[in-house]
Length: 298
Image 1 (tube, helix red, strand yellow):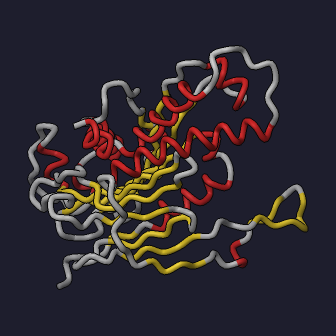
Image 2 (cartoon, rainbow, N blue to C red):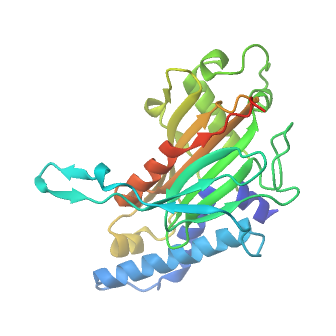
């Protein structure tokens, strides 16, 4: 049961395991001084340990399924100029494209080159077309970095279920978010669905209401979530990382573009410290790249 819950809350659980590894991995005595290299080494160790636990849960302890990945690099034409140093350029992160290899193919997404990728295909793992639930919840794809607490998840489930699970009548036009209801209310329902089966020891993620945006065609909704991570020994965290608390931000995009009554969503999350750097650029590129394949044309 714990493993199933961990999978359903992959984004949040990885952060929680990271903090647990941090709390048990550091010495109890006061640390007089800490070099930069040591801090990086210890941080890397507890994130690797946490990621390994989560990945093992995703794969059921076995090898990852084979997938078809086409690697690519971002064109140098998209290099961003540093306004403080016009002669310098910032190299955008290397990405690879994942084209869903299922039949039918549901989505296309670009993820960082260093990320592992897992496409769910085993019987029972995939969400039921009517209920949107499987052994992995509504998740059909996961990707991430085993050396950091960074995770990408793609979910697919009937938009009707999103409403009915909250007691709303799923009637009328459900082809666009604008016809369904208020964008902030819909983002709240998506958050509640993700939080529903999360282990009770984790803090609740909070929707940034100001981040909610609806596309002009009404079929794509974007928003961000933020969650505080439990830290058992903030004084040690301060000595090693320079902060006494940890927060995790999730970038989200939901779409009804498949045209088959199914809602597809991508969630990309990382610790705020990582999101503020190049990793944040890569995760935003990942979310922006996500496209649901039109299933209305057979």
